[in-house]
Length: 271
Image 1 (cartoon, rainbow, N blue to C red):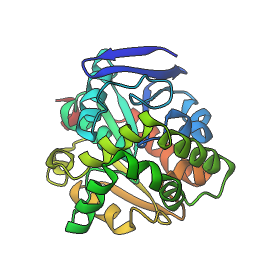
Image 2: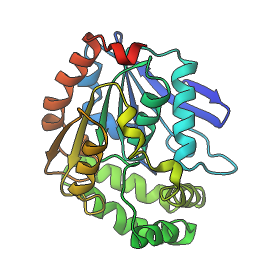
Image 3: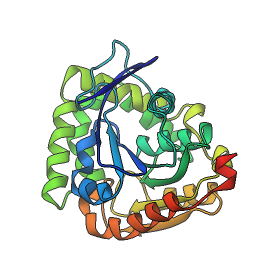
Image 4: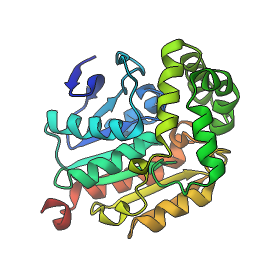
């Protein structure tokens, strides 16, 4: 796999197909292979790039794992390094947060965003902050993830089951537990809260939400939609990784959106 070295670490990525670019960003403790069920369809007439965050997939772990705000920084550096323009970014969970960061900081590069059970817009409570702090301990993350992954994935396809097995195995490793803990500690930080900044996203946004995700209620998806004026919000009866659980249903909504975003000229985003 090719790699890009950023100020925050080296990341591996896949890069295939020709045409306007689509960038795929995955969830915490997952990797780019999550998108395997939809990769070929997205690659039809498009260049598709899929990133593995540091310490995930084929990207090497760092001495000090990154939090979500740093993944956002890294994503911005990545699109700059590859000089990606007319870009549609698809982000799941923390990958959705990073997608929004790209759109906010490089609006001239982004033509559209697809968010999938995204992070970055959670209205925190004392309970949720305490949960993030608890999951921010590597030993706790390691012990909880076998149940937690099944609770948010609600696996029903073979790809779902493969993803759960991979996540559980990664969480059970020393580096994986440290990586998960660092991300969870960061989820309640002010820099991870985009509810106010969402109004400044100028590219069109499609929000897809799996309603069977026990860790991210559909009400959180509506908070995202309210925070991003003009966004479109749809639900599917799946867990956290919607495109793995219902690839056909997800693609029916996403492919027309991507095609429209690539064709359109968005004056606000082009400056």
